[in-house]
Image 1: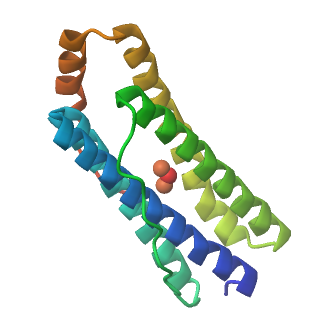
Image 2 (image 1 turned 45 degrees about the vertical axis):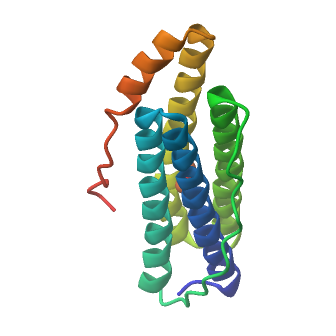
Length: 169
Ligand code: FEO
């Protein structure tokens, strides 16, 4: 059984993950409108991943006999200065999510909720990957600078990403 504190914190996290999905869907639209379909597709995969993260938390609450309480999702911004700005904002956002996950782990430890602590470790590892892949794109964008030709090549590469739901959930 989940404690009330843990139940509330995970319900809040469902909202944070759904907001992340919304934010990345907004970024996907931005890139589609800018004529960068590869970046748009990459962000759409990101949106799918965040929806998956939210559903995984949703299932955890139900499996532990808790109650789901969905909340309104904040409106995301829909415009950015340029491609680099989108990814620096993405990195900032993922660092914020990492902090939230770490706080959830701290709470699970405090509440002696070993099942939630074990469950949360998947997210701890996922955040390392999330931050790393965004950092990698920022590095590539830095190398490219203002060269449009290279940006279009990177756009092609970005379009190769596909969403594959992890099997061990
Ligand atoms: Fe669900 Fe990108 O963190």
